[in-house]
Each structure stands twice: as structure tokens, then as C-alpha cells.
Amino acid sequence: MTTAVLPGTLSLGLARGATELREFFRQKENLIFTVSLPAILMLLLGTVYVREVAQGQMFAASMIGAGIISTSFVGLGMSVVADREDGTLKRLRGTPMPFTSYFIGKIILVFVSSLVEAVLLMIVAIVRFDVQLPSTAEKWFTFGWVFVLGIISCSLIGVALSSIAKSTRNAAGVLNLPYIVLQFLSGVFISTAALPESLRVTGSLFPLKWVCQGFRSVFALNDGYAVMEAAGSWELGKIALVLGAWTIGGLVLVSRTFKWSNAAS
Image 1 (cartoon, rainbow, N blue to C red):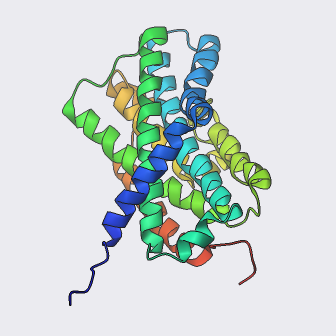
Image 2 (image 1 turned 180 degrees about the horizontal axis):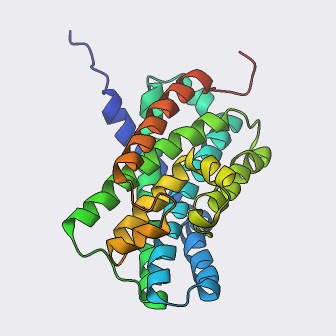
């Protein structure tokens, strides 16, 4: 008599990711809103502020960073709150699916939706603002690791903060408020070099500033534009260090704060 072998954590996570993607793409209104909102904001704000190609390059890079953080931090956090509120998490807890597999599935969803969102943003930037895509493998490599570390670190932070929200109604405030504030402190709409020192330091404590700076290094027409950054350089090593530290810190926060239900344990 043979004993059935349960699928591994990764296999279950990939299966959960496929389920998350099917549900996401079936919800047409949510799909369109999630993917297109950053592109619409870039189009509207860029029309007001962008006056030359160089400005378009920097603005598009910052908006791509802000867009994927919105998907990973705000979108994923609200998704976890919704799963907790409607009992999905409670039901999953009674299955052989481990905690890790659930989050692998969620991060797969964030990666795919963020990639679609980034491609749409690039298309709008090229058509409307004559933005030029990176021309070297080195810059695309930088784009890749900033993209990956940004999504993972901000996804984990969003999941950790989701434990504060008791319902989807108050989750919007819990997650959107810090995100909106940090956009102004992280160089999305205003150059960090133009900010007072106290606000610049505050923004530098969080991932959004470093993600946007990393993308600006990729889309800049030349390295001379690094002087527009607060430190006068791209600081790629520091970007990797900060995002890596937030990834580790996010794992610790999630392991200590994650709740399967709103009931007191």
C-alpha cells in the first residue's frame, strides 16, 4: 500500500498563483482599473508638468516605480484583508496549503499584474512623451533587480500592515494614506533634492524612494542626470541594500503579525 505524497510548498504556491491570476483576469472592471490607473495618472500629470524629453524620462521612471508599489503594497494588502474578511483565509488554513504557498501565489499575481502595468506605462510614455527605452543589457538588468526587490519588499510590508485593518472599508485608509504621502517624499512628483532635509530623510527610510531612484537610473538619458538626486549619484549599491533590508524586515513583520481571521486568537 503506497502513501500519497502531498505536493511541495512551491508546487502549491504555483497552483495558488494560477488560481489568483484566473480570478484577477475574470474581474474585468478590477483588471482595467488596477492596470490602467497609473498610466492615466501619468498621462494627466505628465501633460501638465513634462516640457521636454529628459523630464519625460525621469517622470515615466518614477511613475513606473509608484505604479508597481501601488499594486504590491496597496493592492496586495487590500487583497489579503478581503481574503480574511470573507473567510477565504480561514478555509485555506484547514487545507494542507502552508502559509508560504499562499504568499507565493499572491506574489505571482503581483508580479504579473505589475509587469502588465509597467508595459502599459512604457507604451504611454513612448507615444505621449517620446520616452526612450533603456538601450543596454546592463540597464535592463538594473530594471529587473529593482523591479523584483521592490515588489517583494513592498508586498511583504503591505501584508504586514493588512493585519491592522479589520475590513476592506478601513483597509483603503490604512494602506493608501502612507502610500500617497510617500509619493511626495520619494521623488515621484517632486525632486527629492528640492525637499527639506527632514522630509528627504523621512522618505529615504522607505522603499518607494529607492525603487523610483533605481528606475530613474535606468531611464536617464545619461549619468549626468544623477546630479538631480539628493546624493548627486544613483547609489545603486545602497538601493540594493535598502530594498534587501526591507525584504528581510518584511518577512519578520509578516511572520509576527499575520492573522488568518479577525477573531481574537
